[in-house]
Every structure is written in C-alpha cells, then in structure tokens.
Length: 259
Image 1: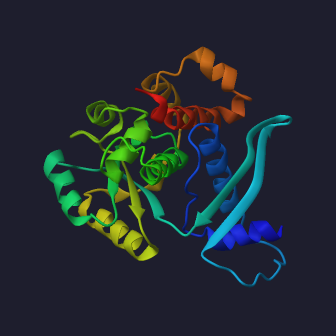
Image 2 (image 1 turned 180 degrees about the horizontal axis):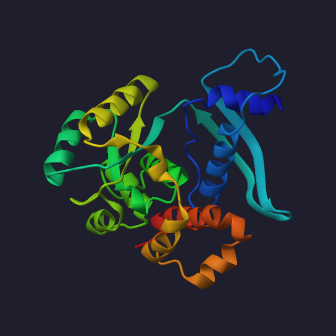
C-alpha cells in the first residue's frame, strides 16, 4: 500500500511517460489510470525523502494469469507534462481555419488540440493520444513536428494529417467539442483551460467525452472494428465501452509500426 500512496502523491496532475509502444504502452498507461482512481486512503503511511522521480526495476504486469504483457521492465518516471481533457456542447464555430489559427498563435507553450466529441471513445481515448504523442517526441519517432498534431494522429490512429482531421477533427457543423491540453506545468495547464473556456462559444460539458451507447456503433465503424473483432475482445455485456476503448488504444499504440 505504501507504493500506492507514493503514486497518488506523485501523480496528482502528472501523467506516466516513456512507455514502450504496443502492449507496454497500454499496460503502463492503464496502471496509471487505476492509480488515479484511488481516493480517500485510510491511515496512509508517512513517506519522507521524496524526489522528482521514481525508479522502477524488474516490473511485470498481467491482465490474464500466466500471460504477462510487461516483463522485466526498468524505467524512471519524472515529473512531466500536465494534461487536461475537457468537453463543450452547443458549440458554434463560424470559421474553422481562423479559430484554429488563433489558438496556434496563443498556445505555443501549452499545445491544444480539438476533436469532434461524438467520435471520442471516452477520456481515456484522449489521454492515451496525449501519452503516445509525448512518448513519440521523447523517443524521436514522432510523425509530425507539432505535439498537438501528433496527438490528433494518434487519436485517429492515422499517419496522414488530412485523414486524421477528416476522421476525428472538428468541422464547421461540430456542436460537441473535446479539447486536449498538454502543458509543461500546472500553471500553463490552467492558462490553457482558461483560454479554451474563453474562446469556445459553447457550454462546458464534460459528459460529451463519455462513450455512450449511442456512440458505440458509430465509433466501431469509424475505426474499422468488425463485430467479430469486438466480440472476441468482449468480456461481458457490461464491459462493452471499456473493451471498445481498449481496441482503439491498441490501434493507437500500433500507429508507429505503420508505413
């Protein structure tokens, strides 16, 4: 339990960085998300001597008993970028190009990318897009030269920007918008959030990010997920949303292997 509390303190507002692409990215990121769900700890042990990094040695992790997706992994986690994911409804954008250009000029230190929220498979979809984009720049395997664009490519699992924009980007008639902010620290993240809230003509509504039953069929079709593939992944009827998100995350993790 001591390690969980250490994670909770260290990762408040920070996100895991530097995973290997493929299942390692999925597993490590999922572990980080689980850690963020830990709340109201009872009688936590005091921890002293904290630094700005945590080192892990010989890490292993299994989804299914006897089938490791992580094995003998060694890595160091440092304080990194802060990520914010927010949603808006009843959005009205008169000129897409002018809207995006204005943000590009004012958000150089906190890249912001916008998505059609109807094509977003939950906050985890956006989170892993940011995680993979950051990882790509760290490892110098990035496809684009812009972190915001890189997150768009990963979110769509596409290597071509035009395809990514058409697939999951905002259009003139987009009424529900998801905004992904990647900042170097909490101060710049706060500035990014303030700017987005100020400039988007719409209502702050984070519920548009959630993967609803209405979205499932459309997103399956959008990402080319067949019924056969989905059923093979499906654990039970209650896990439809989680399993669909996992399939999309796996596609994102494999983007770097596409030519």
